Image (cartoon, rainbow, N blue to C red):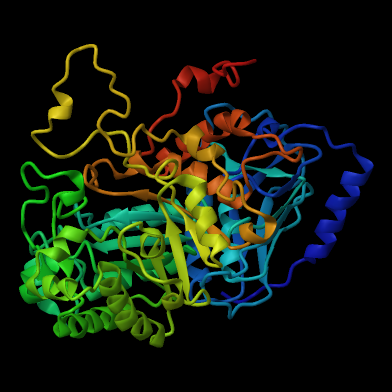
Length: 580
């Protein structure tokens, strides 16, 4: 649609600022506002909370943009049809002003692509006199964040109302705010992925890390290597075609969510053996030989197989895979895995046995693989993300000289803040996915059968319930985790953000929403505006009532988020806390 000129944004802003000077602002937290926004904005000024009627002919005008334009249409429809009824009715007086009839959007850099580091800031002014609301953003992606905020300020049925006389200025703390989903251990349909991305945009999360292949299956259809999915997927209908990927990527663009692919290698590649058995070591062997110690296993879990870095054909296949994936996924980040290389899997191969007998080491073999694959990925103008193991594993790792800090980002998952510290101390940018806090699959027990750990006398201390990363990670635990804990200011600057992760040994589409939401909402707020109030105090206690309301609204929007409290607690805010 064409851009329409409305009264200037600065005019509305000046009115708000004047009012904040003339009228004392109550010393209350945002939870005391009758309507709240999730994640909590960095600045929310609402000196006299009240509401204004929303015109049934409400319009949104914005500059034409290939991705913002459909977002505007989507949000306009949502705003006019959602008719949300909060669980706790907002205590807001309705102004006598004419209904709010229009929002005008201005963006200063319409050409900014959706990429890491893009400016997502925005300012939203909703006057109380019926004049047009104004949303100003640096980029189209910031405008999308502001539209989500506006949608959460609208409520009422049958007539619509919106909070007014308010000003919001908002910008995220961290540039990388994501969810990792494993679609290789159990298959998720495209519609499930789209629902996930839609929920991410509601929570202002901006990175869908798609762990698309693993030892268990290879569901990604590649034009140059079609047999990988033909033979490696679970079934004919359990694949992602080029058109499927295009649809997911485009869906993400219209919601400000980047889609980052992960092709995990050289470990976690057993499914490649269906098409290329000659380049995979220890494929389809039993993962933990009878009577062997844990150190002598062939894989971290059932599902064995690792690429053989000493086989020349390995690199031909890897190059084809990387080329196709980079062509299908336009994002600047390429996740190349490199976690959990299991020594004994490589040691089963005769060529590797020969290499080791000549005083070669497993770390040298991994170095050969990294040195032979990383330059090609970089040549495609990608930044490469690896799991921390490639640098920090105590048994098989590479020298930092092979991992240039300007081109490589490391994602941490072990040992909480200690490994984050090790990564940034070495000069690398870090993505935090600590399994102690951010692994959403933890706490459901182990998935292996015939496990004697569960055959215990009644007095047995269940501790983590058999889950290697148990117990369950509650939303409070996630919310209270500081991903820059123990870092100097300079080191903290290297932490670009975090991701919660859902590994799918015991998850599939039937439980996806409940496993992820609203716990991912907790991380969404901490990565957007932090987990502390202006005095530095943790705000999880006041967040519970806001999260209850937000979870309920997500459910009404079609996201099957699990409850965090009984309905009685929601109807009686503050009464379910441990301290009044």
